[in-house]
Image 1 (tube, helix red, strand yellow):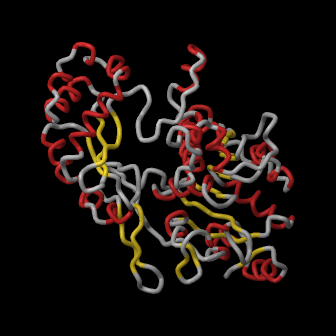
Image 2 (cartoon, rainbow, N blue to C red):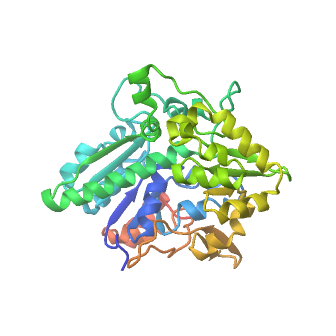
Length: 397
C-alpha cells in the first residue's frame, strides 16, 4: 500500500503550482479529484508541445488524478465542492486571492463544514500583505525572490531560469506544509490553512543573501557560471568546445584537484588551505584549471577528475538525460502507454521510498472523464447528473 492511500484530495486551480503539489500526493496513493472548467479544462492542456491536441506535459502533471469538470461560477457547482470538501482531507488551490471567497468557498467556511480539512493556498504574493491582490506569476516571483538578479553573466541582462522554478518551489513548500499539518492533525484532530506565496518560496532558497546584506551591506551580484564566495567552483571550457563543471571547493578535494592539474604549488600553499583564502584568489585558480581543461576533451577531463574523486560533470541536454544509464538505473525515467498505443517517456516518481514507493497508476484524464463516478460517490443519481450536464453545471468530454 502506498503511503498516502486513503487520503482524499480536492485540487482546484490550474497550470503548475497547485497541480504539481497534488500530483506529488497522487503519486503516493492519495485520491486526487481535479476540478477543472467545462470544455477547455486546465489551460496546461494546451501548453508547450501538443500530441493529438493535448500537451504531453499534461501526462506528467495530471497522472494518477481523476477529473471532475464543473462550472464553479454556478451555485450548484459550488455546493458540489462543499459536499466534496466535507469528506476530504486536503484541498489545494492556486487561484488569485479572493477567488474562493467570491464563490462562498473560503477556507473558514469549509473548515466549519469539516474541521479536519487541510487547505493549501498558493498564490503569487500570499493571502495577506499589501501586494496580495496583485496578479503574480512565476516570472515575477523569481525576480522578487532575488533569483533573477543573480542569474546572469556580470554586466549582462538577467535571464530567467528555463523552467517555472518559482511555481515548483512553492508547490514543494506546500507539500511540506501539508505533511506537517497532517502530522499535527494526529494530535489535535484539527485541520488548518497553509498560505504559500511564489516569491517567498524562492526567497527561502536564497541561502545567505539576506544575512550578508544585514551584516555587511553586501548586495550579491551575478557571477555567471561561478558560485560567489565558494572556490573553485565553475564551468571550464575544454579542447572540444564542451564544458566541464568542477566543484573543487572542499579542502581535501582542492588538494587532489591541484595535484591532478600539475599545480601542487597551489595545493600546498598555506593561503589556500581554506575556502576564505581561495575566494581571495579565485581568478588565479580559475585560470589554472581553465588552462588544464583546454588541453583535454570533455570526456578526457571528466575521466581524469573522476579518477581522483573530484566532483565534476558535463552540462546535460534532455537528450543526454534520456540516454544516461544512471537515470535509467534509478527509475528516473519511466515509459507509459498512451491511449493510442504509443509510448511516452516521463519523469519517474520522486522521492524513492524503500518500502512503500509511489507509482504511476493511471494516465492523465480527459476533461471530466470521472465526473459521473465522482458525483455518484457523493450521492447524486444518474438523472440528477444528466440534468447538471444539460444545464452546463457539470461536463464530460
